[in-house]
Image (cartoon, rainbow, N blue to C red; front, side, top):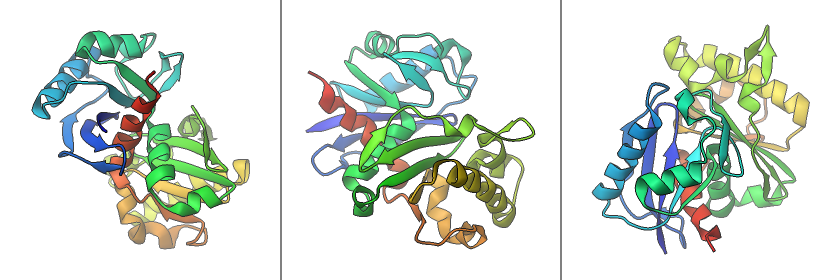
Length: 248
């Protein structure tokens, strides 16, 4: 079964066709610029353009960077404020003509990693999955199952500063931090999470995670406790597409 997975982020909308049996991409990964200034209607048009480019019609799964309850977006600090309050399933269906399944973007990536990533996840009691990008997305995995809709990136870390405003991948780029200086910041975030939630394993996702060898030596954790997500930046797309399996 082939379905379209869409991963909406603070800096880009990424999408591809996914083979739900294998978890592999069945098309190119199409990327379109996105930002806090991108109006929801423009985002819908971008997704329509992607569907046309990939010659796809059918159900779509969307990973969304915010807190969603009963398909209503409650909060998405890194996106245009007009997203808040929308019934996203209805909004996407009206805009694209396709039945749409929605879930938090970090949860989507975690679902993909559980099913098609490192098998150690299913053998671990408490796993903390983090996506490092414009913000810090999070998902708790307990005995192979996700405790959905966590937003650890918005926890206050120090002096009223949210964790993602201190140690996200975007912070490294915007402040032009070296790998060492950024890793020292990330380490403080991870130490805070580790003390607060006692995970047995921490998985780092997002595009920057492929550079783990460049900054892992600056982290005060055993290499066996912090590992890179195997599916990389495709995880959110794959997990979003998998969500369409829940369509009745």
